[in-house]
Length: 106
Image 1: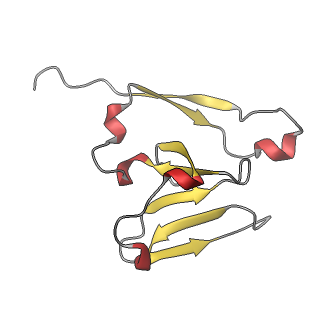
Image 2 (image 1 turned 120 degrees about the horizontal axis):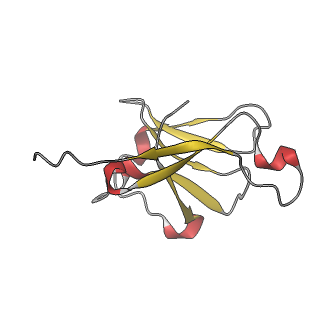
């Protein structure tokens, strides 16, 4: 229930420019995915995916110059059943969508 907007990147395409020494690894269940959090503030930064170990899911709020509010619409996975547990080719089930409507008064 981290509530982050996650974007995808290949492992070799990400460079941590500062604070790597503060990252804490968290693993659970199958121990395949590697979830990283900041040990100072607790924010989820990124994870190496179980569904695609060649990719990171990255918290968009942790990327310089990007905000979660830059996305007009974000699909939300239902999160209870992992795509790998459902069989080959099955994707995540979408529970709904988050939409951002800027305040026009500003």
